[in-house]
Image (cartoon, rainbow, N blue to C red):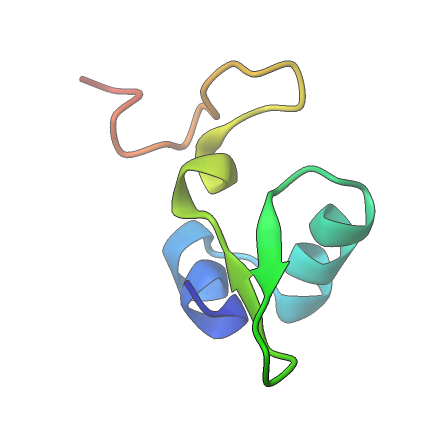
Length: 60
């Protein structure tokens, strides 16, 4: 998922996503063209591996 889509999904700024990347809080890959793609499932995890409390599935 793109940085902007990730921002929209979790309601944070681009800077926050980049901070999470720098802190290894989310998994990502860099495409051949240099773009960053975030693995969606890592957006909903806390660093210890538990689900993030604002996850859409957390209330279920």
